[in-house]
Image 1 (cartoon, rainbow, N blue to C red):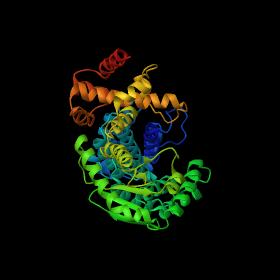
Image 2: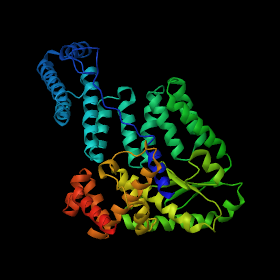
Image 3: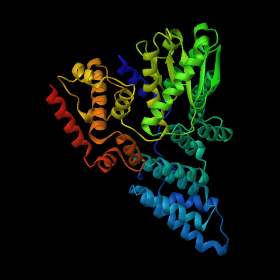
Image 4: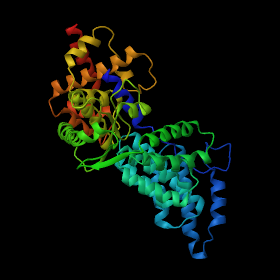
Length: 445
């Protein structure tokens, strides 16, 4: 059931990514929107923390007025305007009161989150950096910036941000937990245990931390004897006590690089990001993943190496599936599940005609359902149909619009959401393409 492999991969890939809505400082004023101080409270705080000289009175009055306008724009959800007004404040006074600085930073957070939701991650990164420059705010903007960097597989950059923030905020449990995730992504299981233990000590009621810590401890124990090897695009680890693994590691690494060349060429995604790969025997793999799967991507690629080279063709297909996830993730684009899983299966490659005959002769899934999350689904037949429909739609799209269809779509998705990018790329809406695809399936039936 290779389709289920993909589901596990995408379900785990973003466990370390959270997005908290930014909140503007509050002094428990119940009449104002949650986490937003009213203007009088802001003014009072500003007066207490900033003692302007007589020559600055005019500027100080203008700063206060701009601050009020920024909060009003924020209340109206005009996040870009609020951010621009905050920028104007700093043109007048590059060191405003602490209250204004905190609010400016959090206003920037609102705008950054809005940019992220509109598929503009690069712009969001710049705004998060501005938020940090205005105020560190207990490490929250650093946390958000690091999470966004991880969405684009920029692990090394995220690590720098988190480590700098932890120097200033060593008791921030979310920063500690994210540092643990980064250590895990880099194959440093013992270090991941250390940081997540520290996070749980601070936030002892956090059930996710507790569960994740047990997983990391098991992983650290399993990886005690693992060694690392590097190639142009990968940092791999394998069990040095496993004779079969040691004997075949060079061939495995060559297969990995060939698979990367194939998939990166098809997708048109080239970058210098090194991907962490764990070559696992069945026992170590099943400690961390469903026993029915052969590979998983969760920021790292984990692959079962069982009876190699006898099962080499199946392993190559699994490699290509997981590399598709890894390369799509490296773009920083937020792909819907149906596109992620459809492409991952398409480029294994799978026999799409056989899949259509096996799974799409009766109930055909709704594309609306397939654009949401699948991770809560428990109906196996529904999951199989979802995977079948996804690869069928991706195959139909490639056949109808050409081999470069998805490359062009990715370029447009860097600047707009899926539906707008789809229409701009193909001239048809996503719904139009879906309707044509359904017509094909019904004709085949």
